[in-house]
Length: 335
Ligand code: SF4
Image 1: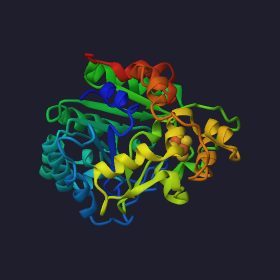
Image 2 (image 1 turned 180 degrees about the vertical axis):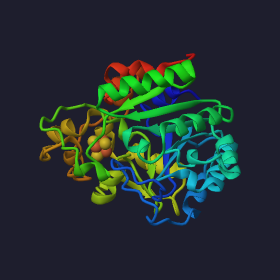
Image 3 (image 1 turned 180 degrees about the horizontal axis):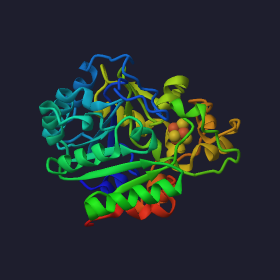
Image 4 (image 1 turned 90 degrees about the vertical axis):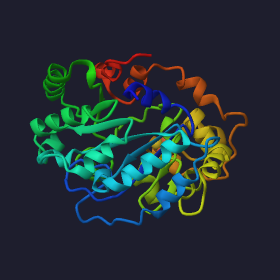
């Protein structure tokens, strides 16, 4: 499953399910959006197993996307969830910080990686302080032999760094490894050195409210800005819990909530304007302050698909901050 196909699915409500397998990570990257560390708490995996067991041939997401912390700290769980999901028709992807690249790949990680349809690796100056780039790229070459599709997520606002690393990746892998370039955002540990933008630009429909997210403790949110929704738990962004709700029920809840539908279709700022709710300093700040019973326009359910669903993957990547590097998400893509 190519990176471009993963990105295209991001515009489709409930086409994917994000699963945060653990907050633990052996690395301590300075920009970590989830504030992960080697000693962070790790919850029972039972709610995750249970939720995937509710996938059926008729009701399942197209894709589960596993992250953390570092999901490959639980390699047996990765393999178990990917295998169970596949039985219902769901494919699987994972994002890793490549901690295992410092040594030869452990057998359990090799087994887990082999069950995936897509493997993404993070690479940036912060990860490079923890894992040498040469080690990460060498391990990625080994992963390419195990998984049908691989990609890199490179997070940087430094064009000089991007030019150098992207050229190196192209020299080594050609078109086999597409790249999603992103900017460091003021979330998690990065809030200590990245400021919120001073000017609030309305991005319109929010595609980050399309895929539910299972947080470490099993709470299922409608938004993938994990640290933010966990802190505020606004009514329209809490869908349920993996320990008690089925995929069909969570999916129905995500379709039924009028404020959530409006955020997906029109965006948080327009939803606040139309419902008379106050606008706050930022887009997401306005969103989490929306009352769950705000009076929002009718018939907005599928608008977001019309507005952003027709965009090419590289247009979506540009919308998310990839700039002139947005075309790299389609490297080697056969439509
Ligand atoms: S606008 Fe709302 S749903 Fe979208 S990312 Fe921000 S908090 Fe999440």
